[in-house]
Image (cartoon, rainbow, N blue to C red; front, top):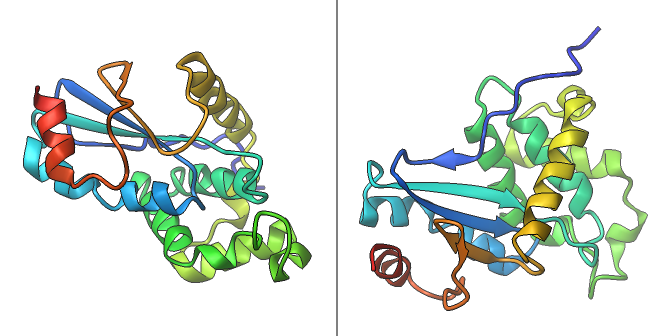
Length: 185
């Protein structure tokens, strides 16, 4: 019988006192653009000064968002932990057309099942997620992520917070250098 209450590895990178939170929706192209800047940002600010925390912000107009969000959390329970979750985020962002409806409502993905989506994620990330996807404790984490977003007034992705305050002046289109300057100001 598989373990249904695995430990989730937090989606945190860096170990600094400054906390930069990124609220990302896995199939959003703007979230993916922001996600790809994590390492550059850590290099600019310093991994010893900054902690980047990815918060998963599922949005209902991205029809498979809850399934994909759960798959990311499931990946975080694997031995590779947060790096496995990162591989899933990257795989989905890279090939988002395979995980998103056309115009949020139509297209070939309308015939896909959640199991099809999980299989696509496994294929593109190189991870085995089906058993981890069933873990009972993922429900609580999904609810926590949603509640945390709502409590902080987060409605769209990507949204950024610096030390608990929403940074409305930052955008996924900004270079990592602008983020670093704002974080250090």
